[in-house]
Amino acid sequence: MKIFAVGLNYASHNKEMKRTFESSEPVLFMKPDTALLKDGKPFFLPDFSEDVQYETELVVRVCRLGKNIAEQFAHRYYDQVTVGIDFTARDLQKKQKELGLPWEIAKAFDQSAAVGTFIPREEIGLLQELNFRLDINGETVQQGNSSEMIYSIDRIIAFISRFFTLKIGDLIFTGTPAGVGPVKINDHLQGFIEERKVLDFRVK
Image (spheres, rainbow, N blue to C red):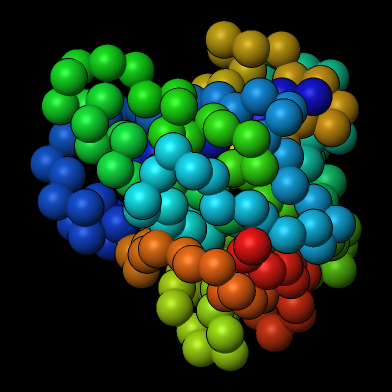
């Protein structure tokens, strides 16, 4: 199982992070399967970072084997969606960027890819117009709509499959809108698609 993630996919987040970089294609990175956190298990703050931040995203599950998938057929290759958290060690990421080094240690560490309960596509309507949000300790801290994506889910699927064979069970984190921020011990994170709660866990 592979975990793909897309960066710079919401203009609001790019502005929030003061990024001026523009790309004509999706910006892609990967996480190992050891990054996966599911079933409501707690997220344990790592000891190597003083600034671990949440990035709330829609996550889709690949349901068919595919390579070089045309964008017009990409909708056939994912069947479920949920809310996920791309945890980022922001201080490590900043340090690695300043040194011009890869920053997998800031993005791909153990438990850095939290996912909620997956919902079948047929239960939620248009994936191109989905509202999603994250609440921490009962307060909404981040929200977005899939229509705000710079690159649609189908475009992302087509792009990834040019370079990597997609397999059943692969996960794709589709990018985060504005509103990212730090987490601390005892925080209670709950993620929603529309008003349906799909993600619920605590920080330890």
